[in-house]
Image 1 (tube, helix red, strand yellow):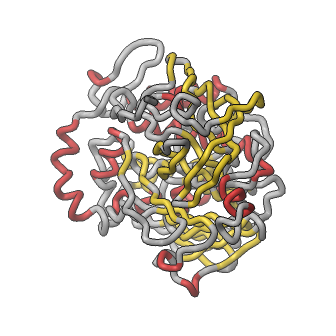
Image 2: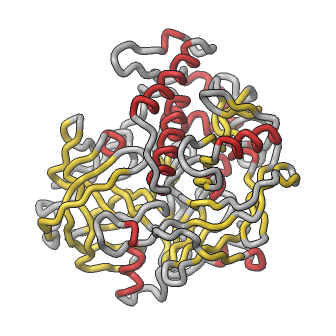
Length: 454
């Protein structure tokens, strides 16, 4: 029998270090997307060390700091969180300007998945929330007999893979995940063709295979994708809540050189067009109604007369749209000629340093050499306009996590951070924005649609 997932909560990483990892990942991802040199590893490590220095000299209890070559922070005192859980359940979905929801703080500390409600639309998968809105994960079935796999849904890449039964990592085996191979699936066929993919955080390498894949009841027999024989710890660790990744950008980006699952669904006549449509949910709302629909849009999730469609301006296969305007509290920031790569696989917004500083100044925030912060109680509104339609970012999404987790009404790490890689016009726009719009991409028409959520 294949090894099945047994989730183990995070116990060794301070939430602020995890945020720095997301910032580093965003910078590396933007570099790869724009064809530029990635920041060097020693530069990224320096950012982590600066973050640790800040924490050591902050109000966090020094007794929680472990020692060793890979010093990390242990779990924060859970008494702070349990004291607030009851009130969080009653007010986190409606409060703004009252500081970060205790539910978000607890999720940032402990990790894990918040299950999605079962969607009612056809050809649709529910999207579970990873930790405090850091990623979105669907369950699909692969093999004979079918096994459930938790898959990170990523509009910023184009390769689909799961772990192999022979998977290895720096830690030895690839942890408590669900794996695929001939021992678990009688329909599994492995080729001799190798592949490797490097992401903003982590990398995998393996071989191309074929097996039966069921996506929201849509059966793709003998689908071609990858099994990873090697995974870095960002994918293999027991605390990682997914077993593989599905890229839903255009297949021109694919390192495997094969169609994406949504393209295969369309070419096999299982859906009418290669369309992927996302409704990204927010943990603090407690609606748990995130979903991805294949082949069309779910009209119950957006306001019909707000739907705008814009051309994809990426020349290589990402989903990139022209930004008409960027406003803060209704005031135009004066930025023109900007584009946004819309990426469900990125948590934050990564913008050029000058743009970030300008927006943060208008927000009443600040940036230093480490990060940009805003008051956790801020009600300020940032909006991005596409297709002459403005989409506001909820103020809760701009104040991600308290710098001091014991002070949820103090300063917060901002949802927009400065990118050290890229031109002065390119933004990498992740879930901080995408939680605030219905987002649909059409491979055949090479266009992007956005609408206000219903």
